[in-house]
Image (cartoon, rainbow, N blue to C red; front, side, top):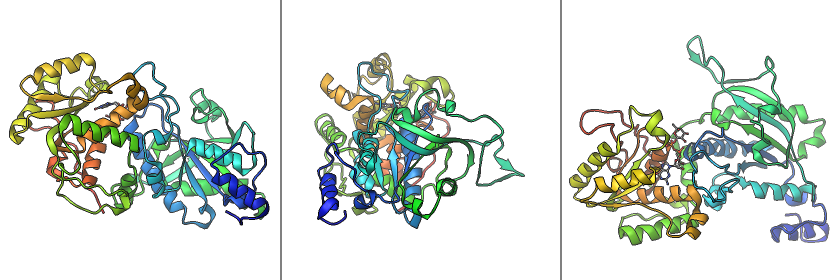
Length: 441
Ligand code: GFB
């Protein structure tokens, strides 16, 4: 950060002090932010937590690659504050605008890709030279939309085009400010039909940069762009080693890990050592293995809520789900099942009765203080972390919540047969199963 004397030194000290209200402007070259490109993104509000995690991977892999280009050496991906999601039902909790640090270990994410929590982005904006400025300028915002017809003569081609045949205004921001953040102001707003993988976004950004750049001196300016409905973008290569590196870097926050570890120890007598899981402190040190044994319990992820109505053909009833789990418990000679579910309290009572000869364990915050601390999203993460250490796991057909548990167990080194299992609609007979996507190192 510059040298340690004169005004550069003063600025460096400010950065290191992390980050007090700034009385004066720090020039960007001193902060090493010269030519910084910030990419904000968001995801359609109806999408749930675990699809959003997958969209993050698409963006993180993209930004990590982009960083290799000279123009984008200083690119940063800004993590969108979590809006209150449709599935977070609990009343009386502050569940709007949550930072990613609530759920994830940012230091771990950052060792894969240059990401910033939204508050950190605001801090950098202030440092850059706008102390006290209430608004943050976003040069271009792109609302990505699907093409109406995907195939051209039977071929899927990567392409994008700005929509000019229909009106496109900030009105398309579903009525609210960009990313629900009042301080963001958009310079130019575009609707873009987009079909293809994340790599294609580079072309879209380059076009915008060329439009903005008045002269060579402009290239060093700091710029912010926003990509809206980023779920439209596909993975460059789904399931390859880059996908898995980004996925492995998505470690949960220390606080959530600790709550899950305490619960596993107290309620299920399971520790990392007894489950045969040795997870290095850093994801980069993980190595391929398949010898994790799991605690003395099975885990079932039983998706209810909207699945009961919208996926009636593949979602089991409580009774048939219980029959399937009991069959597994007998087969594995285990008496305890940990149940991860979004079932209602009434459904939970019914399930407890259905398991009367077995031990049914379910995680609920031990106090209101803990509930307020974890929030609905944190409770769901604890459920995933308990399922990740089970001897055997069975999940719900086509639930991204279940997929993320599969991935976690792949990383921890379980056998595929103990992991990639799916509830059937009914006991016996054939049924659709989730695909097996093993880890790639
Ligand atoms: O994560 P998610 O996208 O998975 O959405 P799906 C489901 C949400 O419901 C989770 C809660 O993020 C949790 O908030 N939830 C589900 C759970 N299962 C559990 C559980 O075992 N424990 C806890 N504590 N909470 C998508 C939906 O759901 O499926 C979409 O997001 C759409 O809206 C799609 O319906 C078909 O992939 O299961």
